[in-house]
Length: 134
Image (cartoon, rainbow, N blue to C red; front, side, top):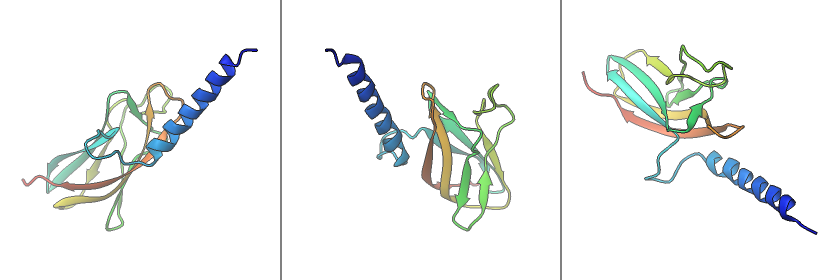
């Protein structure tokens, strides 16, 4: 009696559970790259924020990324181009920030999917970025 296929299915299910559980702890240990990076473009008087996905990672467009600033303001990211199924951003999502700021501090919530995965994981990332001086 062979248990090969059922053991393989069990091992795959366990590895999938680990893949889902581990990334949802959200922050990679220091020194490890995050699946998404925030790029600050501009100066203190005109700021654009852009989310750049690591290779092999897609940003979910159905659950738009949001940066919750420490002072209670929410900034939502979007892009003009989506994949044909409208599920993912086909270009880096951006957000414009009005007003003068010296620092962007808050919490970024972004849903990401690995290219080969059939599910997405929501990350909660602390953000604390200086704004370039003009």
